[in-house]
Length: 232
Image (cartoon, rainbow, N blue to C red; front, side, top):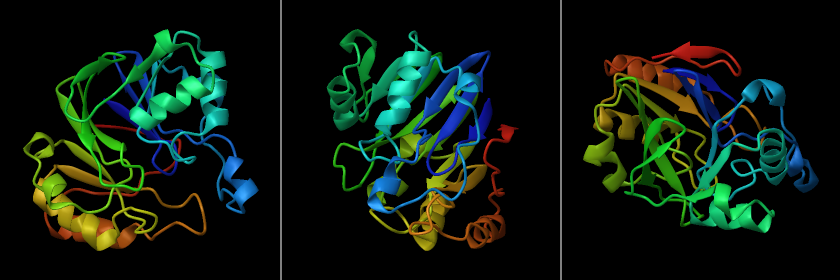
């Protein structure tokens, strides 16, 4: 499985030529609220080539209306999938209901050739989800935006993953670094990587302490580079 970090909580997953994009924030729509991106989106729209788009919840840095419309227009065959509020927003944007998929926590599905299990999240968008993504014998848990929750940290469906991608910013309904480390130590993946930092000055964190804590606990970790593919 090949993975590319797209900044913040956004990722591109690729397996056997099938491509799943999750929570891409390509525009600068939050600048109108005084929140300006620090780095550009690392992949051109023409290079994304998604078979499916997944939005974990309906916040602008995860469901960016401009990005959704750009992808929908550039890739008419792309399936648009999301949590209940995200799905509702897709329809409000005028997307064809036949290409929109509603995802609910605990209900597994196939999405662009990936086995996807939506996982409940604890966030200000009460319909927010994370996702367990499986393909090619590898399993990844992507937390999306979530606070620390004992039920999540002890969820048997996401224990022992090959990779956990977890938020560390500690603001606006997300785990902080210490909480993310605690969750990872409970989940015991082979590798755990920090995300949801570095895009906005108002909402970021230093990933290096998280990486050091994981390595000390015997869990592999490193700092992802936006736009640079890695494999698991």
